[in-house]
Length: 80
Image (tube, rainbow, N blue to C red; front, side, top):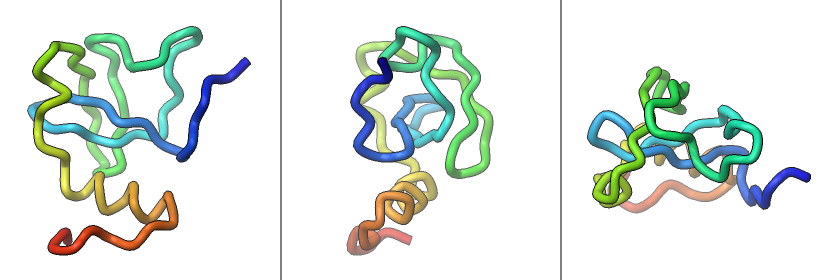
């Protein structure tokens, strides 16, 4: 049974930012395991980082903008 997915994307910390991806999680996983290559909404291929501090990184502005569009939400004020 697939997990709860309120939007057609997931967040993935990688390369010093929190990115968004439409790639499926591996079977049975609720996150992208450390080192998983993932395509992002900002058109990059990154490797997931599951360290404790990775989720505290800043959000990629391009991924955030694309994620808002996919979710049918207006862009955040001040975001490009």
